[in-house]
Length: 192
Image (cartoon, rainbow, N blue to C red; front, side):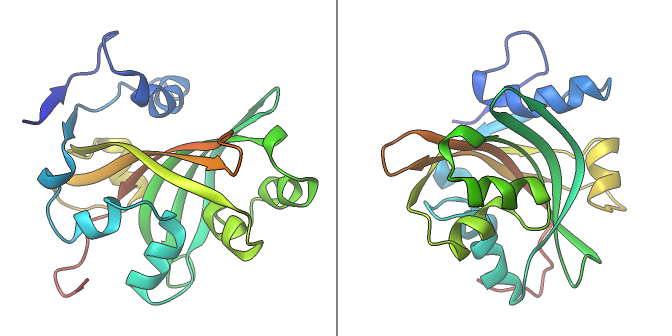
């Protein structure tokens, strides 16, 4: 059974990354309803419930490259945090809102430099460099977009949004990144 998680001091640990960006902006986290993988409806289940990187999954679904727009960033020691939008159609259409923490000290210098250039999504960089890693989803959820998500995802009417909390590990099982991924509504004509 799914659980509605109200924004309080009692939020589960996996929400901390998203809460970090919301707190910095002076915003309250929207209520999140944690779901079991079988409770995620299609087509979102095919886009979220798997052990693949999100960027190539979205590229396959939307049949084109996925671009990156960085909304905010912060560097703390060897952790690089950023709040992002992934988009298609040359930046014209947002397909995901995300918050990510990348462990720079677990990346080779060339990958670290490419991450800090902020030109491509993290998953795209890992894929293009054939960097061995594991994608390991930790939680799935549903939320109603608040004003912030509605603005950055360019939503014009109420809807349900689906997402996941995922971690990426290197071949030695060291943390490369943790990410919260919230998908834009999928057009009704899209098929998986």
